[in-house]
Image (cartoon, rainbow, N blue to C red; front, side, top):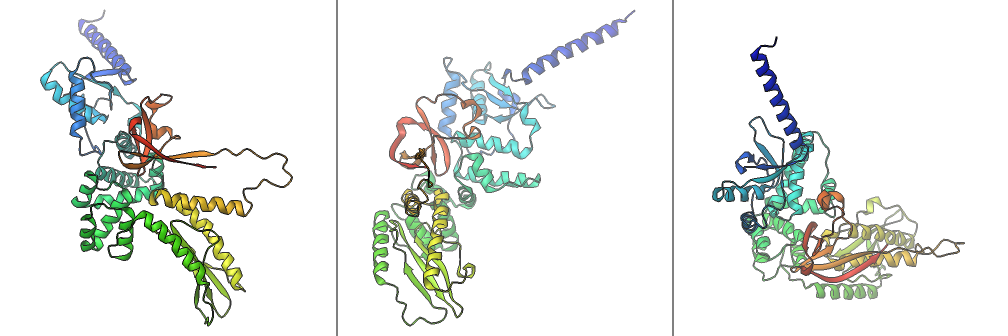
Length: 452
């Protein structure tokens, strides 16, 4: 015969089982209704919240016809029955405001079971990536987030490179990450330039950080300018002095410099041992800079290198020390010419560090080179010309900022919730290497480039 106490125990176990079953349903992804005080934040990469965005969400929460459009994502309940927020900190802040006015208000929340199986660095990265995709993270927070993530990953024994971070965040390359990391150390003056819209160019801001540390007087001159152009800042950083550079004038000057060097015809008379001769490269006329072939005569023969004179400062990596020894000057010159292709490839691979004009200049050279050398011609004996598919790179502006319209985006960048959905009225663009979802009416088409 079962004693009453045992009946009570069975009853209690049954209730626990039912509660566990209920909890299991919730953990499976069921939307919960939580009081804002049941939720908390920890290690949020975003430290500054947009007041306008917060107020907008508060108004939505107050409006019974709108309410909370998107649930927050939380960890499973901790030992105190509280829920740590993974994604949705702004909505949590808005909920805390609204619940004071309406005690019955509850936040829609989904428990993310997968997150607990991930490393702390990965959890942190996903929080930051969510904010970057929504474009509601300050520039300094973005820089600190990347640095903190790399440090966390390192402590966990992971080998994460800047290129890895760039790929996951939808940035063009590791250079974009490197420049963002510099902005951790930006002064209030540099940050103000970005926040007030004087310049939002990440390359320019990173250069200004360096200049302020190395030459404070020059920095003061630069930030006093009514307009701060990337080319002007680059020249100032390179030369240590301020010289206003007009992008259109720079292009014209580069062309004239090429012409001038072409007519100089290489003063080689009286050459002595180890003298470097400069030969203007005029097989192709660059519009945004100039290229020189450098020939050094030694007692054993000729060495060659390359000189590239462009605003972006990307140079040839091969020095005289790495050059083979040639019997004649012509052979050395041909070797120097062969270096131009690799240099041009490095320019177009670092698109974030160059202007659209500089990128197109290098790209046009490569197309000309491959056509002139026959690389683009069909193989001998081929009966039919192979149809070549061209991909378009579409350039434009959003609110005065140069951008690229994104037509191919990785699933991780766009987010699982966007897969197979039509973004009616919105488009994805890349501004300074940052992927943004913007109103299609704000996107202004400028040009399109077609390439294989």
